[in-house]
Amino acid sequence: MNPARLARFHDCERYFICPLCHAELRLDSTSLRCPNRHTFDIAKQGYVNLAPAAKQSQFYSKESFANRGRILNAGYYSHIASAVLDAVRAHCPANRRPAILDAGCGEGFYARAVQQANPQADVLAFDISKDSVQQAAREDESLAIRWFVGNLADLPLRDAAVDCILDVFSPVHYGEFRRVLRPGGIVVKVVPGARHDEQLRELASAQLRHADYSNEQTVDQFARHFDVLDTRLVSRTFAMPPDDVRAFAHMTPLLFNVNIDALDLGRIRELTIEAQVIVGRKRHGRPPTAHVNAPETP
Image 1 (cartoon, rainbow, N blue to C red):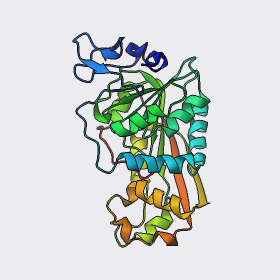
Image 2 (image 1 turned 90 degrees about the vertical axis):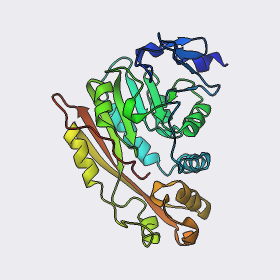
Image 3 (image 1 turned 90 degrees about the horizontal axis):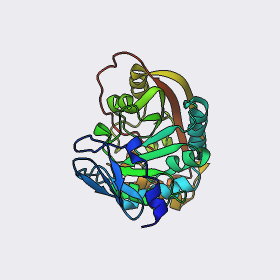
């Protein structure tokens, strides 16, 4: 195995615990191993599976992540990535070596952007989908990000391990986020704006339970758990060629339960990509009851 792919895990005991017994993990040859001999091999692509029993959704396939990669790499979400980087730059605790966790990293678009902008930081990134993490690790030219398959409801991370959590169009577990954040740590949460995907929503309205979208409940729930430091709405409408419209339709959770073949995608000539970026700081005191919310629509 490429030594550089192993090197990123050389100090894994700083961050990782065994998902089975919660003892610390250490690098042992090409595996992470705890004192109870639970062993997790590092794959040749440079990631480790710390949720071996997890099952990914049928909607998150290699094809869906390939479509996501196409859309993200085409620049349709660059304004959102810029807003995330601005939030990290402005609010992440100014440690010499901050630890940043991308929760629900997908194919790694935001984790790679944050690592490139913050080369001094330790960037960790996980998803429940093995396929997406495998793709993310394979495309990581920096060989610096600690990629892992993980369970959001039982993160294989030490208490107070990270300074910043990115939660971009992903589920959130407030109890686990609070547990792994250091004092003063922040969460950068990205949720869809009201106009996000509005052209597709209109086209598929007959098949959608709710043709309109509101993020009010999600934003209010976030504010119950974290002290909100900043909120920003970013929005752009892009002209989009037919092939990109088709790729977008096949990757967005908005249409997971829609018969896409029944939609006249040729009517879509442009698409609005809108998100609200919220920054919250870990709150002192007893938190509300933790829960896992549903994934947002990217």
